[in-house]
Image (cartoon, rainbow, N blue to C red; front, side, top):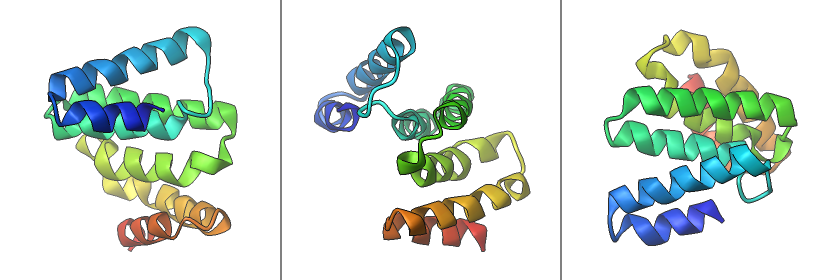
Length: 127
């Protein structure tokens, strides 16, 4: 899974971790989506790019994650994708007021999926 690969390589070298995630995303885009490469994984990678100061790259990956989420109708990762994309990445180019309805949607989704961590994150960003 991409998250496990990221965790193992981050401690060694952030550039290697970024490369591993980029290669994973490239494989996804070429060969299709699998459960281990969900839109949430792409949104998490986008937040990593923002953390590393590459805001434009993070913004583009966050937008990609949201487009894939809509195309796949992936309810299992909807709350994570929305929260990571909107709270970590999109606010660098878009107003946070644009994200408010999405945080509300993320809270509802997280409640349905019993993801209390994301209920709290979504509510904190919503209010």
